[in-house]
Image (cartoon, rainbow, N blue to C red; front, side, top):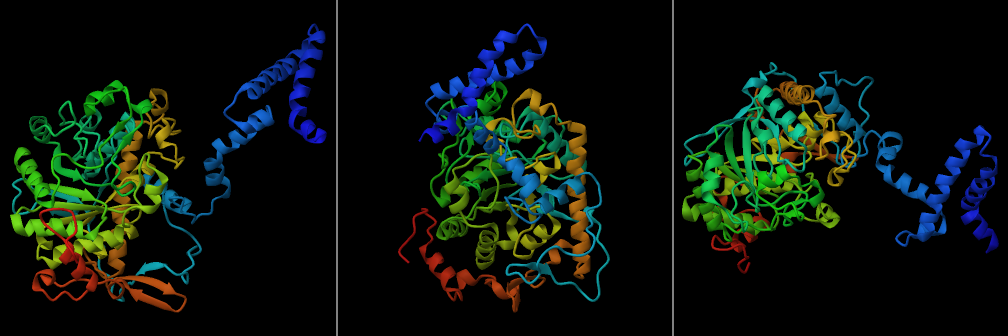
Length: 536
């Protein structure tokens, strides 16, 4: 017991005794630095003994603080000293290095061969052709969005910036992303935090995301305000309207902006108070059934002057989306596009249980939505976007092969403007100025330099995609399908994506002869009049 006490308090006692004894020799100048240091440490030790929140510091005064020091820099230690090149936490060092290189216009080529274990289960690749095609001009990698009910269709790039709000990101980060989007001729999704002055300043194309908080077009009690919406939606810079039903990393939870990150400017942009956390409701107040959702889409399309209107969701209960599909057939109202977000998507802050255990991963969600639209003969009228941990040309190719028309990336473009994956987005202490409202921290982010990196990352990623498609004998991204992608299932078995997944035939859900038992059961459960399941 005495030895234990000695171990716990020895350093504190030494500091106190040294400080007291050295006071006698203060007339000798060389004692000052040591006395000051031990005096300061003694005060730290006294504070440790008196505080009541942390047991380690009470039991180990002074030395106990080392534990919290190492805990605070643990992500950086792991990232730079311990983490392997392929440890995806959530993005591997190899993935981040690829983005950094492409954003800086540096070569991303690797010498000596692959570092991947090609015999490991889950390994994926594109099968190449014995007769490669010419490399296509990426200027043609665009998608026309706007169905038969849209009067202002939009030609979108195949690769765009996914939803990230001002408030979650800094003003300089928003400026950099939007200016980069303008340089590269692709769009920038505003996120649900509304359209800020920093979105408008550079003049890049915007997709205005409308979440359940209706920021930028809300009444005082947080409901939808059609007049304010029409005023914002009529801006020429706003190309499309995206209703956010759910976000991949926290489906069913709503958005969170901590109070300490809310500035007067953010409060004005969103139309909220600075006195509390900004929490979006989990569900919309403007609609509560599939039919009402489509009626809301039709209303927004009218208020915006005929611009493309769609919605984003992370797939949850399958019968709910099929209920929306049945509502399309019943009302004749169609969204112009749907963006499928995967549960592997990013967020500024969310409960761990939500990020780890809620929502359907991107590929399964995308395939289900694609199949449902094919099965009701509407796939050619509604475009599909995909978002969720998309970084490379191969990631884009994978989602295109199973049904997407285009891809979005959020964290990829964050890396392009300097994010180092410190995972401190919610603390307002982002070390690179990307996810903070601290003016001094975000000053480190130089807009002109980062905007060019955003443009470079976009251009070089599409260039890599064009080269990959050419190797597969394809001249345009629209030609890639599930036959071109391959996955290893075991050490002795590989299968094409087309062999692994179920793909419905056109009109199959309407025919009454549905081959897949799962799709048949979900279709029977779906209701246009409500999200509740009917008896299967």
